[in-house]
Amino acid sequence: MLLNLALNFIQASVSTDETTRVYNRMSGITRYIYENMPNYDAAGYVVFILVFILSAIVFKLGFARELPLLKNIIIYIFLFVGCIMLTFFAFFLPMIEGLMVAALILVVYKSRMWREKREEAKVAAKS
Image (cartoon, rainbow, N blue to C red; front, side):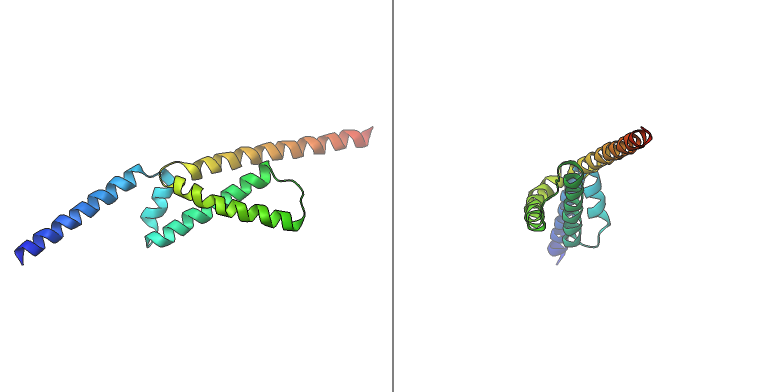
């Protein structure tokens, strides 16, 4: 019985050490999600959904063109499948942070372009 208690203590300390080591290697937002979610399955789905949504925003702001509905659906299906691999990268690389920065840069770029087009339209209307 005493040996069994000692083995349980050793196993618990090893798993805690491993968990701490893995958490220390994780990127910031992914680590935050995994530390604050009730279980690991839910945290994995949250990371995947976050990567997919940010990838879709970056795609829409930076690369999307006007396409028919069926082609858009196919593109987003392939984006969804590609985000599975990006989710694996997001555990230890700052994928989510990089996608957030890319989305922010593209939002600023698109807003400046929209403002310049609006000002050009005003100048053209006055002429």
